[in-house]
Amino acid sequence: MRRALSIRARLSFVFIFLFLLVIVLGFESLNSLSYVNDASAQIRDRWLPSTRALGDLNNLTTDFPAAESAMLRATTAGEREAIERRLTNMDRDVAAAELAYRRIRHDAKDNALFERFTARWSEYRSRVADVIAKHRPEAASLAAYDAASETLGMLTDRNVASAREASERSGLVYAQAREHIALTILLAGLLVAGAMVHVTRSISAPLVDLAERMHRLAASETSVEVQGTLRHDEIGEMARAVLVFRNNAVDLAQNRQALAQQATMLQEKLEEEQRLTLLQRNFVSMASHEFRTPLGIIDGHAQRMISMRERLTADELTERARKVRNAVRRMTQLIANLISSSRLIDGRIGFNYHPAQVDLTAIVREACHLQRELTPDANLVDCPAERPLVVYGDAGLLSQVLGNLVSNAVKYSPSGAAVKITGLQDGAHVSVVIEDHGIGIPDTDRQRVFERYYRGSNTAGIVGSGVGLYLVKTIIDLHQGSIMLDSSENEGSRFTLRLPASSLETHEPVRVPRQLELTTVG
Image (cartoon, rainbow, N blue to C red; front, side):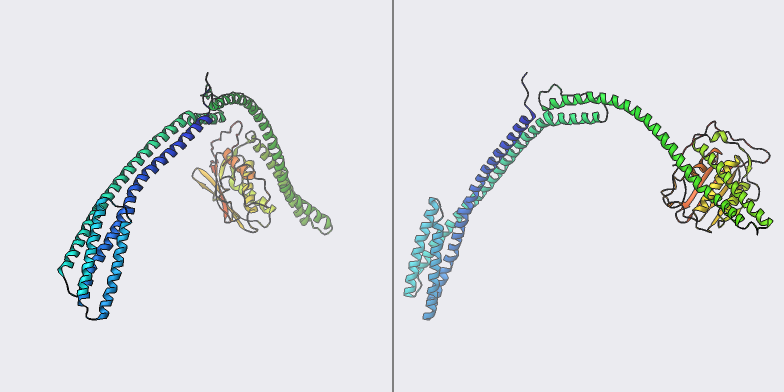
């Protein structure tokens, strides 16, 4: 089978063809312009100079009769000398105009008319000389001038008519040259369009098609059909290479799928390991922070009791022992909360959910009491409801919710700033509002504060684990309630808890799922 021309050879032929086409077009344009130049040269080199010379002759010859009359009227020698100088200058100018006309090439009729004019003008000048010598006018000089002027007029009219014909002929040549060039350009455009169509169909389109199929292969579309594998040029070689690439891509996709499965398994194990590590780190952080305060209280009172053992009264000893027991009770509560938090994070809180009718007002008072013991300078404003706020839920979990919210309000507020806790019942729901005037929550963080381990961007330097609000949201969802946040940075935050109300006489038990599936709020 005969080998097809290579792409390089085809492109070389196309470029050579276009180069020759440009050369031919240039020669044709130059040839057309030469015709126009020849027609213009007739006007530029013959008729314009001839018209200028004849115009000078008409102007100069017209002034001679007036000079002749002035000479005859002159009364003094000075006037005659001035007129003679004027006539001499005019003769010199006429001779120069005649010489300029003779230097231009003319046909026989123009030359004959010009020679007749010069003869009659010479006759007129000789008669003028006789008139001036005799100092009296003669009719013969006027007749000679009229004959010369008439001949010059005929020559001028003929020159003007010939110049008009040359101008019309030049315009016609220009129009013909323009049409010829336009036709040549049109033909060249058609030839170039044909060359481009050939390049597009035989080279560009197959290359674009191969590129598109390679993009599809790169996107893991292994069912692509490769065209042009039977061609015997560079495009055929590329098509066969793409076919090999497709087969390799199929094998690679199969291997990638197997590797992806293994990577997924490893990723799951890694995530589980990271989760356990993070839980351990958070537990250590929370434990070290939360236990430090009650241990400090116990240690402080113990040291005071030792140092003042001989001076302490029974009442003072009882008071300090009571404070030590409160600190111990706080530690016990913290241990219980940590255990509940661990179960909640592990998704096993449903097994430890023990609902009953509880009064939120009492839980709020207890949370405020514990917070005042932990933070003596805390300014908690407790506004109890007019009647008990009874809900159906787990007292321990709800105590953890309110404890976290009250603790956060105090922790993120300036020392001594007021924290207001309000409880009320609105129809079938019970609401508790915790409002502070602390650092607030930025707009960019407000939608993510209930996510696990997420902390606001303005909490640097304040101890925390990022689990508290996540636990609050999860426990409230478990009680089929809701929590709303209204906060502005540097102005404070307001958390509103809403839980279904329950009657002291009757209540609707809450259906608890077998195992709680934790979700984050984004």
